[in-house]
Image 1: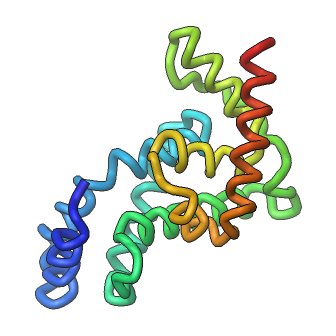
Image 2: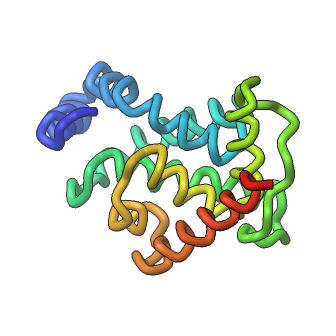
Image 3: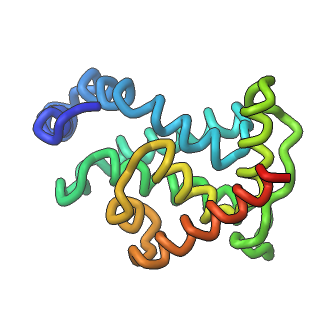
Length: 174
C-alpha cells in the first residue's frame, strides 16, 4: 500500500503531466484489494469482478482531476467501486431491494471446506452487510472509512457488522 504522500505525488503526475505510468502504479497498488472487494461482493464471479474493477479504474482515471485529497485515494477509489457495484445491481434488478438476501452463486470461490463455509455464510448476508464485512474484516478498514465509502453513518455501519456477524455465526454453526 502506498503512503498518502506517494499517492498524492502519483496523482499530481497523472493530472499535471497526463502520466499514465503514474496511474498504472496506482492501479498496481490497489487492484488486488479492489478485486478482492468485488470478489466477495459478487460471491466469486470472476468475470463480473474483472468488469467492475476495470470500470472503477476507468472512472477513477477520468475523474482524477476531481480528487480533492481529503481522504485517501483508496477510500475514494473504493467509493467509486461501491457505486459501480450498486449501479450494476440496479441495472440487473431495477425493482429489487438491495437489502434483500442475495441468491446463491454457482461458481465456488475455493474448493476447500472452510472457503465453502465462509462463502455460504457470506451468501446469507444482504449486499450492504457483505460490503461492510468485506471492508472491515478483509480490507481491514476502520468504521469511519467504511462510513465514508458507503455514505452510511458510523453507527449504521456498526449495526450492519453486528447483524452480519450474527448471521454468519448462525450459518457456520449449522
